[in-house]
Image 1 (cartoon, rainbow, N blue to C red):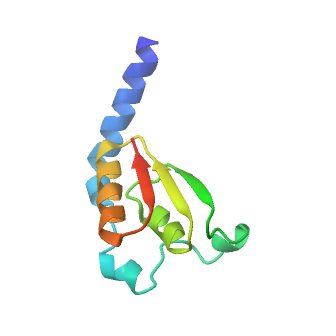
Image 2 (image 1 turned 180 degrees about the vertical axis):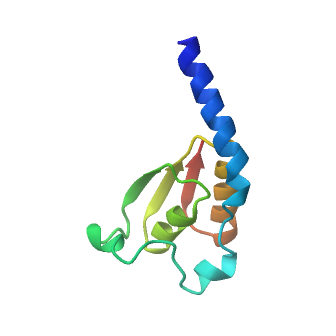
Length: 102
């Protein structure tokens, strides 16, 4: 178990180190209708308005907020504490219902 925890800590440190190099979009991007989703992604699912979503490996929250602007209530999960803090700030600044957990 100690070995697994050591690998997990090492992985988290690595993702925390690169998280600042992956910035969130500015508030205006989303508020003006921008999305970080690929064109094909929303077409894979039925209408997400009013649905709850779990977004694994959500990183900085850009895609989570994009889904929230399509009407979903999104919970994002990521191993990086740094990325989760960026995602929380993004959700708070965008005024959308998205919860991010580390």
